[in-house]
Length: 129
Image (cartoon, rainbow, N blue to C red; front, side):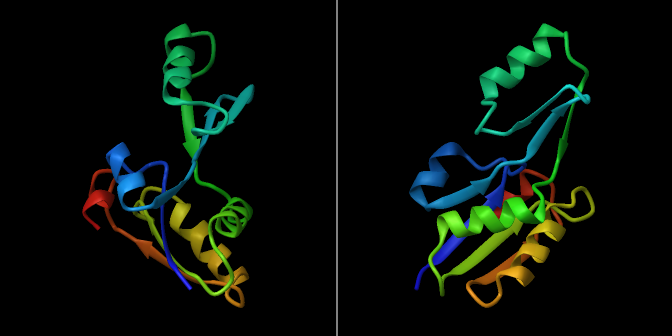
């Protein structure tokens, strides 16, 4: 049994920490109006994001939290049955990400020990947790 550390795409963690500390990041959803929706770092990398923003042909981007289903699938991908998943997220006062994590944890409680953490912090504050 292993401990897996998960955070979300809103965390401003230095890139090298993901490798150094084996941190997994569940991506957020990026919406450009009704026309286009992308999954961060899966369908749209940082350069692609800025290309779309600078192109000014699409509406101003907005983000949304991963759904509980996205969390379930993500946890299944990164962990083995019996693992503990420490899932650390941006404050629930700014995002529904923590709530989605809690829902997924409840659904998977017979398989994994998922421990959702509401950092009560914004993006940079997640680093310090």
